[in-house]
Length: 178
Image (cartoon, rainbow, N blue to C red; front, side):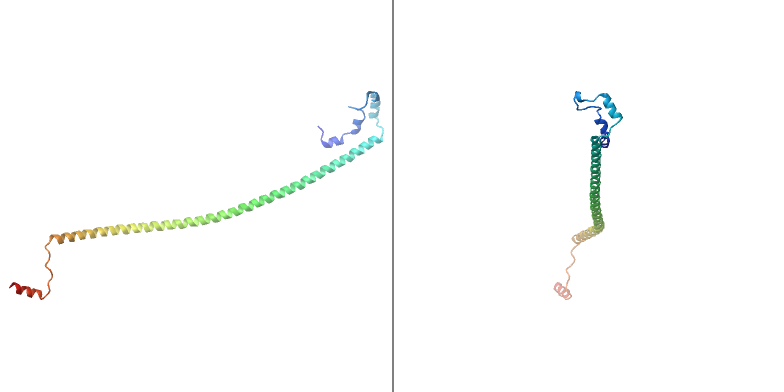
């Protein structure tokens, strides 16, 4: 298949010289000798020159149109590339912002985790101290309960001591007994 340029450059003289399909009727059709003579020694004719000039002019217009299309494509591609770079730059800025936000959030969470860990350690230390204190108090209570039970047993097992008397009461009591 011919390209557009090859088709435009194709020799129109050969096509109009009678070879191939011709729209002539059988009685107006040139003979083989006439055709051979016209193709062997082309005679300058104004219609062929007009056709060649028109073909060259059309060829020039086609080339100009192709050049305009190429230029439009270049401009369109440049604009598309510019938009693509702008979208890429915007996405990059968004990702940088998100990265900064996530780093800040990570620092905040790490600080909170550190504070919670310190608080947990302090709570465990206080808990251990309170358990030790509770154990010591439980031992002391047990010792006091044993002491109280021992006193109670001593009080209930021995006779009651005499009631305390006043210094003058002993003389009155002796005199009453005499």
